[in-house]
Image (cartoon, rainbow, N blue to C red; front, top):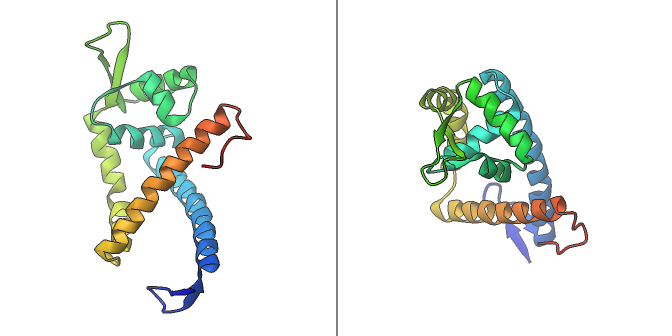
Length: 170
C-alpha cells in the first residue's frame, strides 16, 4: 500500500512514511533545542530557565518547587536553585501556600510573562503560519500525535530516570 503525500502527490510506502517521521522528529528536536537556546540567549535567560518559564505558563495555578522539579526533571535542590535564580531576576514570584505555611508556590511574574510573550511574538506567528496550511482534520491528527508522543516521552523519561533501562518500550 502506498500513500500520497498531501503536499507533493508523491507516493510513499508506510515504511517510508514512518522513516520520514522518525527522521523529521529527530531534526525537529535538534532544531527546537537550537531555537530554545537562541531565544534564551535573546531574552538573557539560561535555556533551563526558559523551559521552566514555558512550563509555568501552561499551569493555571502557582506550583510548588517540588512540582517544578517534576515538570523539569531537575532534582529538588536544582529546582530550588532555579527558582531562587529566577525570583532574584524577577521572572517568578513566590506566594505563601494557603494550605501549608511551610512551603511556597511559584508563578510567573506579570512582567516576565509580558517580556517573554513579546519575545515569542515573531516566532509564534511563524509557527502559526506553518499550521495555517493544514486542514482541520490534519490539525486534529497533528494534535493527537503531539499529545501521544508527549505521553510516551514522559513515560520513557520516567523509565530511564528510575534506572529501569530494560522496561517496556512504551
